[in-house]
Length: 251
Image (cartoon, rainbow, N blue to C red):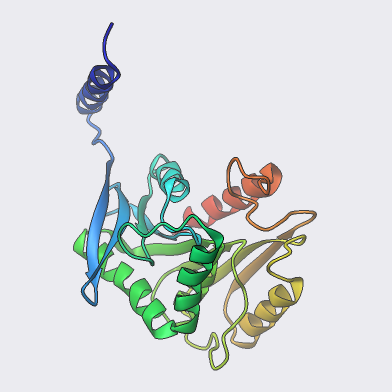
């Protein structure tokens, strides 16, 4: 009986052979290590070629895990390149509540550092020949709040998309420099991010004449896109994903 590793090698060989036969290139997916202020961070790239539209993906408060990698491959299967970035540091993937709160809290308190880490994504994308001319940023929960930080910082992307993310605007910040569209998917039963935050963000975007699309889902809790979790809400997940993919098709 063949070992599991041996079967995996055969499957990989057959897949590569079939792609070569039909003139296609296998998807290049890999972990990537980069440094910000001498600290190592580990992201993940799905590279579909220099002409493919790019999705910069920002993780939740447990760091870059299998959830984000699964989303990256879902997008890669549709022809998009993905750069999933790391905001905590290589090997830092908190599992305890207090650790998650500590790592996110540090960045919420130090917006300069947060912006430096987010800006580094653009440098990493350039270094890996990813397409920043057709690029959006998306984030989940904490990552959604980080994506809005990118928007307020004036980073030059086509859109900023948040799935059940933090929506409040820090004191002293606004959306006057935002260059792309803002798209928000939010559960109206979210006990962590209020509908007041949702309304205030809408007003802020309207005041600054930022193109935006704000969607709420009834009886839908926080973290509604997280597979295999108690909060997962299939209808809201599928609807928001479909609308997001429609946005990507406009790039």
